Image (cartoon, rainbow, N blue to C red; front, side, top):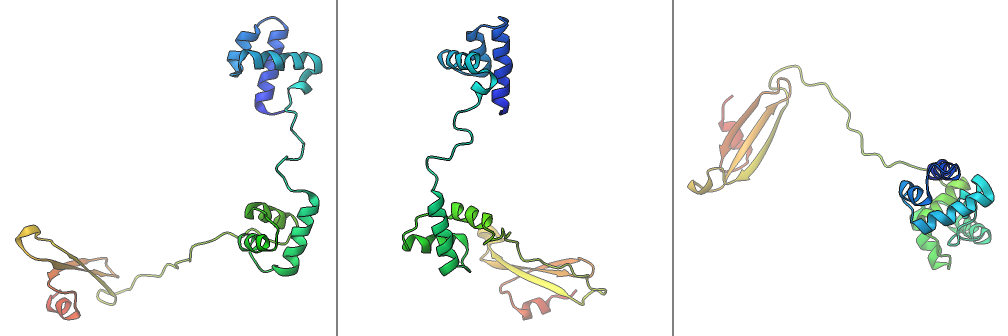
Length: 185
């Protein structure tokens, strides 16, 4: 039984003992009065089993038959064994087998023809910073109207020393090596 069905069982036990009325029970379990009355009648006739949803354990009306599943898996093994589920679903549709790629993925995992694979971002390994000031400098420039309407566009060049984390910035007309070397540390 689901949690909702167990809750309904407790409420209907109180209705049976006349601690609650059906109208109050309907409000407690958020059902309409008529639906609550129908479910209570089924509970009185069949007991707790009457509260379990009738579709539980049944095959889906929208599902594919076992014969279609076997045919699709056989076709996949025959022609597309190295394809992922999404591309294989597209190719199978061209062959006349229309199956959603997620359904195909579940079938392939169940038949052990496909393994779940996580897409991971490329790993960036940490490196130790340089030992001495000036060994590695990182520089970048950003063009913008830094002086608003008082001047034209200029480049803010930012320099960071890897060893100490010291930052140095300068404004220049261009982002060039010559402009960076003009400035003294």
